[in-house]
Every structure is written in structure tokens, then in C-alpha cells.
Image 1: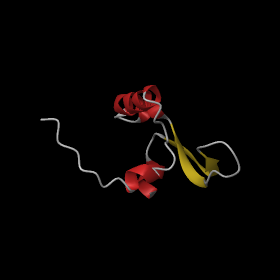
Image 2 (image 1 turned 90 degrees about the horizontal axis):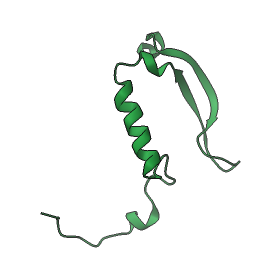
Image 3 (image 1 turned 45 degrees about the horizontal axis):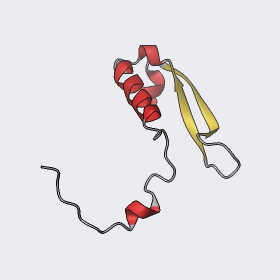
Image 4 (image 1 turned 135 degrees about the vertical axis):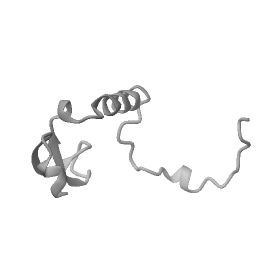
Amino acid sequence: MDALKKDKSFIDTIAGVRFAPGKESKATSAYLVQIQEIPIKDEIKFAVDFQRNENSLFPSPATPEEKINNTEQKDLPF
């Protein structure tokens, strides 16, 4: 963690960040960074844009109940 804080992209540490609306969402801490200073900024932007287009940005829960209980095996597509 110290290496991240020493990087030129690091701006601040923020406590109590919520990544979903409402009181029921969990609070966590986050690092605020200058994305233009990160060498893989284009890959990060692409991943976020892709997830937004797929409506899968920060899905909740991470492993939906139907996927946990799905024991049905499907054939591979090739």
C-alpha cells in the first residue's frame, strides 16, 4: 500500500466511500488517483466503458444466488 501512496498518480485516501446508492450499501475506503498518470490508463478506461455498455458495472452481489446454485453443466461451444 505504501508503494501506491508514493506513486505520482496518487492524490488522496478517502474513507467511507459507497459504490452503490442507499443506506444499505457497504462503505469502504478508496484511493483517489490521477488516471492520466497510470501507464495502463487506456486498458482501465476500456474495461470501465465495456462494463457500462454491458450494464455490469459493480454488479451486486458479485456472485448472484442463481450462479452459486447452478450445478447444471453446459457443453462447451467448440
